[in-house]
Length: 548
Image: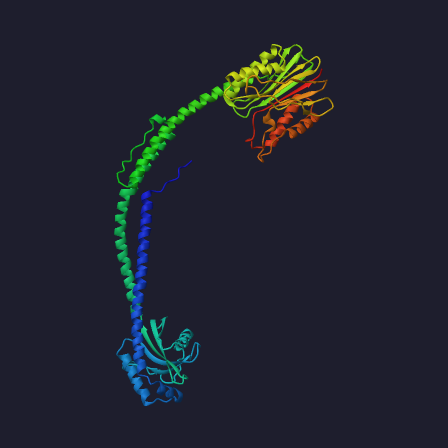
């Protein structure tokens, strides 16, 4: 597979620092622009307000009202016109005029009262508006709305900025004047051009941006140099050393031959600490890999030994069926499913003599090698005592005494029965084991009557009680360990003795051969457990049919 190309750390650092410097420069330039622009506009607004109030101080409102009402100019009106013309000629205002707003239409939305002019404008223009003249298309509908809003202000100057195609950027200031009766309302207006302001602001912004870019570039170069020496270069050396170490490991080099090239970082900060920790980590990793190899070899050896022990254990149990093909008095079949490597369950059956068959099943309270050893010892003791002709209770008494002498906490629940093949008398003893099920011909499986005695190996000198039952032709005996009935599925439900008995009766109604019956039982257990096998233990089943 093609290796994905990695981006260089230095390139990322350069891009990040460059973007940072650009953002800072742009932000500072933008802040400078608004600060500078607002200061300039504020100074111009103060200038406009001064001109408006000077002009307003020369206006006789009552005389103005009479002139507006009659449409005739008075001497006071003419003197005011001269004063307004003088103010305009001696200031930097573009227009100085007094209007009476009428409506908010696009045309004829105001009527002129005064319109200040200079001598040059009188010579150049002949159609200068005067008292009573309508504005025509001089003011837009938007401007007319601003006029109406300005009339509602009390002795307060209203400002309006507009970018016109004829004059460019214009700042307009408006101050309302009212007659005593309140019927006549006019606005004293001053227009001032701000084109030079915008040019100055643009030059200022350009100057600030260029300056910031120069300063930012110098700062960026210094920052990159510092970052490269203290961060990027050490990190690159550490990455190369780590990559070389990984390459050695991927090539299958022995842990004892692995080496980590020292990146030689001496920055005296966290980067150096990272380098030292990386070096220490690789040394610990090499040590761990050595220990892991040794542990793996030990596990493989132990696994091989466990497999041999498991095979030996399995080989000690009867596994060839039919077990006694020459005998016609009975048929027998058994299965053992091991949950781990070594089983704590066992079963056995053997002829004590030509006329007696011994059947044993056991369950040790443990697993692994100790349980397997106890199984071998117990099986050997039971078999030896039974072949000496001892009754089942005597066999368990002697076996229990032997196991209790050297037992270190492990015990065995076991069941032993000896069947007289001629008479069908089955003598048995139960040492704390699950009671087998008995099925008489024509009936169903039911628990075998059995007294519960001590488990083997728990205490020496305890008694065991022997019992017996008469078997007739066609009777069956089913032996099992607790791993079958205690098996739990994912809903934490146990297989249970009741469910087991029901399934056993159903299996017997479907098939006849003992092997087929136990296979159906195994399939039912697997279906009950499902895919989750966490509740599974060792399971042993033994089935005997007596023919007589």
